Image (cartoon, rainbow, N blue to C red; front, top):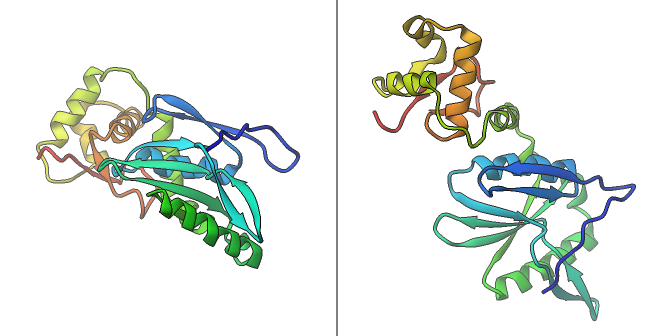
Length: 209
């Protein structure tokens, strides 16, 4: 096991992702890895994620080679997985595929799966845009009076559109949408973020109906 030191290069430009889930900032090496963080941050099945975890060695063409996965995911059931992030255009390369097979074998022997994730899975829209929007409203602040009112009102319905709450609460659509985004980012409310961009037409619900 060894720790990889991340440095800027002409090819890779480091990105910092502020994670409320991890209570820390992740330093990643590409914009694709940065985008992957949004999925990890808001996945209910992931308890924590670590960028550039301790690496390991694998054998390839009779040589011992160092390897550091892009991420280590810890799921809520305690299981862990390594993640390798790569553009779809790179995975057809025969050398990459042969090396990745050996990396997977070593990871499996150590009790963890190594999963390949591509831009086809990460840059899915409008999901990624919605996750980035939720991230802007995440934070440690306590709930405001308006946020509590919205939460209590939504809990009275099986599902309700954001715009329908405007007349009940006597606030602007913009103020209400910002409030809903905050509650969505906290996991207090829920919405389908895979079909359309979040707006006042978005249906929201609570698990405490």
